Amino acid sequence: MGKWSRRLAFSLDGLRGDPRRILDWAAASGFTGVELPLHGKPVGMADLDRSGTRDLRSFLSDRNLVLASVSGSLPGALDHPNGADQAVHALERVLERLALTGRSPLVLEIEPLGVGEEASDEVLSEALERMRELTEHYEYPVALVGHVLDVKRIAEALDGDAAPFVGIGFDPLRILEVEGDASIWLEQWGKRLHVVYVEDGVPHYGLVNFARVGDGAIPWYQVFEKLEELDYAGPLVIRTARATDPYEEAVRAKRFVERI
Image (spheres, one colour):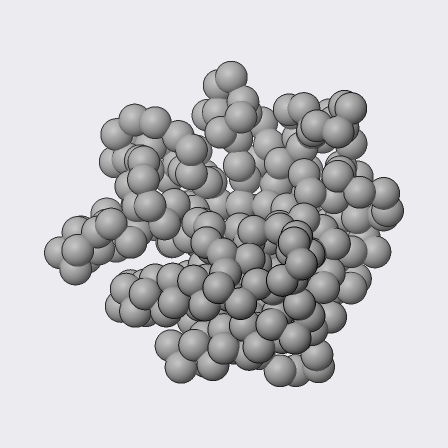
């Protein structure tokens, strides 16, 4: 299905090596975009100054690549008073920097919800409202990822058309942590999907072991059928940092998606 190939990006998060060579490889391999980490190796978007950001943008443009997304983590549990303050302040600092670089979705791993006596639905709602205000102020899309049941709570708290810039990132490995049909979760998150990851695995005694895309437990044909039904127009980001050869696996995963 050709339309998926136009959205395929390669995640550099967790990889080692010269970022310029990796980006050269991504372009030569036919990817249309890349995901970069917020901090750390091989190049952190928030670690770059304005000159470095301009150079990166130019490097990507010269290779017909776009910055599909930026990945990081959000410190502090959103349903704890102190944690929520920490998370919101961290988000504000990040958005101040990223807003100067474009509007590629920021994918943030959240800390587990519902842990400890201080966990509160009211605090969660207030934190999401503050996040809504920040994302609308900077007009910057943010996708939250985490345990499926935590993401479900967040999606339910973001009622109706409120908070259009606060969305969900679909992490298929998280689906394997719980029972249920992947398409049901996608249906629930619907228009809040900002980013979809392509990665596979096999559940094993509470862990999710690595599997090549298409050889694991994720029902990819069903997933893409649902994405098509939902008119999903965001990026598909292939993550292969867990593979023995992440580049070989990325090309294989890309070909698999293009055949669907």
